[in-house]
Length: 249
Image 1 (cartoon, rainbow, N blue to C red):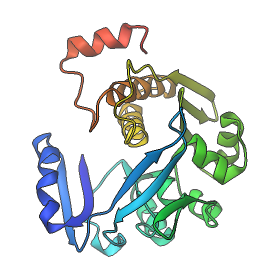
Image 2: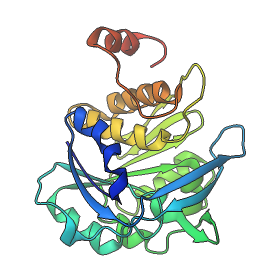
Image 3: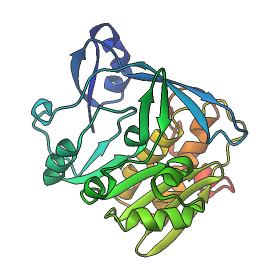
């Protein structure tokens, strides 16, 4: 596993945690580190106000290291980080997984406002796995029902749609819809829900079925939401197997 990122030189130590987990990190210095502040104002925490805290600049295909990967996960958090040529060129080297959040957020003043993505049809034709939450899906399709929205998005090209909502995970593919609930005992770490869910799904999807990947992603995300910060793992194989068999999954 490898991470390609841009950030302020002074923030490079933040990457040590990834390196300690065996992740290969390719970091490029930037004047700022990209970041956002999330302000939640609905009970389900699916509607939020996003404020930009910094912008590390765009990713250019010329800056990509010479690496091979089965799946390239493109996960921008704000506008301007990734453009269509970057997506299309990268698609020639492997499967593309794309998080829509960085493309539906448009900066207006000191806020990031969700708006439709004009280039979605062209860009999504190069995407294999697409991640959206319920609010983003509604902005992109005009559909409130998650299943209807997922079907519309699939028509643009992605073969698997991962849609998160307050209640859990919906995966839409040609073979049907698969769902799994979120079951956190409490919600103290809502920020990062989608990133965790998408990464867990893709990792499991490399070796497992759609249904199994959906279920595992919901479990990992549930555990992550119980505490601020990133998911720290199951602890050991015994804990994983116990949770895997429990009614939390």
